[in-house]
Length: 368
Image (cartoon, rainbow, N blue to C red):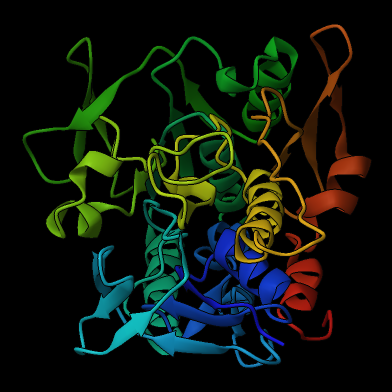
């Protein structure tokens, strides 16, 4: 017995989790431009190490037992008719729509093209470039910048590696000065040059970069890990710019519904519900939205459930690998303090496998 049509646009962490949660209770259609799931957490290592090239790609074919996955691009949401128009011209009717289109990440954490082959080719280009570079510049000292710098250093012990960060300390968004010091100590002990208070921009000549003081840095390869962009341009082009805030995120209420829309939800990196755009947050939002969607679809039933409110996670564990055998974990503790755990916890939690077995199981595959 299915209680309605749920269309989920976006097959990332949040979209996959939500589609799986509703698979037995609604007719679920998951729409994604990619033909395969992209495990982005493994992408920084895949961009550096050839043996990881195919690890981030997991087929969607075992995700849904009852619903279906459609490879396509959503171009319009027709709220009056309650349908989604795809670029192919196909229209998908919905009783509930979920926007889970995520955010666009800088290289090498980006899925290039629509097929696994195209994306793996992009990783191979990064791997070749890194293996040939004399000097690699990484811009941005958040978790991704630190992780990528460590991966490059371990893969290329003979190359110069520079990490330039605009802030006064690494990992400053975690709120832990100790974590920033530990990351800096590890990088500098592995001969990575760390430049703090160093806002970088491309220089006038190819392969040159300029800091805010006008100093020139020459590097034959650079990666910018300075933030993400919500994948919502399609909504603006479709006439739903009023759904978005100034940063391009979908504005949602406490139930994770698009403001003013009882039948449209938004989960994960694409919405404005949480400052922490990390995978555990996306999964938690998917679980809560799935409950609220069931409540909405069954609202006329005798055993009516109440919708739940989303409580934004102000502080969440942040795991930063330094390659596969080291790293740090920033763990919030009561009282507003943070604990910084070392390599053993970090390796078990993330660094060794980059959560690949867990994500494979989410998509219906064995851990290996």
